Length: 411
Image 1 (cartoon, rainbow, N blue to C red):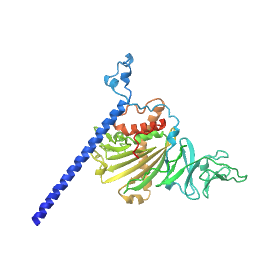
Image 2: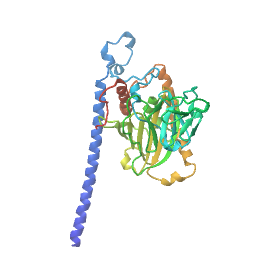
Image 3: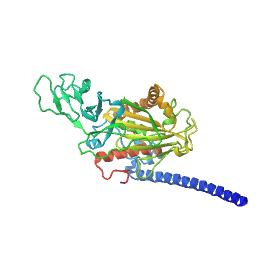
Image 4: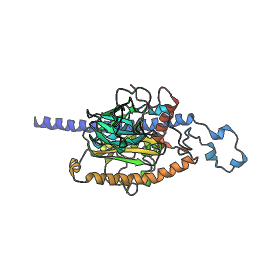
């Protein structure tokens, strides 16, 4: 029996070995399939583009250009010139605008959204509301006032408004039937959402919760002097990290010979190779990413599944105006839960987030200046620009009213 048991254990060990080999082969095959999809998708995009060199014979002024440049197809993506007014169709989404923890019972949060001023506050029932940040009486900013019994009071003459915009108090005069504009406003999973569009709001909100097993460690809000699309372009790109973030999270990263973003043909999500980072663009303005934590400079050849510990990030890029973005950043970890309870740790996380962001901002602000003067910030997309290109194609389709939308998830 001992001999038979030893033989069975040997067979079991051999079977385990074969299973691991099969898993490795399946994983390699899936990676290869995703890469082939990438090549096919790139070819399809090129087929839709205009071949500059095939439109007309080169003139004498272009005779000095290299043959490679003349023959290369150009992607049909033009983001240049002054930022145009936002299309109304882009407003017909739920937008996260604040973290619940920042909106106390008697506080107000002023925000700009699509170049209009709004103010958030909680009503008598504790639910959040969003009304126009302009008093109907003399156009005073309401956020300079106070919240009294669930109504926001104007600091100029004391007019008080409920969360639906109705004026319920007018001290020292007869009460008139006055109402200012309000927006649909909901609270879900620790965030305040508004619907700024004219279409009826959808009944469901997307979930932005970190994956199971993660603990939220920081929630940070910043106002940035760049158009929200340019910031999204930046957040959806990881290939710039070893060149831009040399003093922060990418310190010590080597420069890979090839960077790829592998994604399904109809998706706005995927993973980076060779970096252990999964990333997703979630319409209309959110970027979610999960980063596998490993030793600095040792990221190549790993996936997030191969890493024992992870950092999850949420970036919300709210379009405040044509040259300003309200950024909501949330950071979660699936390790070191005690860090959350260390005094002043939140300030350390904010300091680090600002360091990383400042490395990007000096570049994106420069892009914006050149874009306004006519430069195309998407002049020559390459393979690792795939997710940013898909965001731009999605946004263009929204503004054109295309149906169905590209890269939409199947229902």
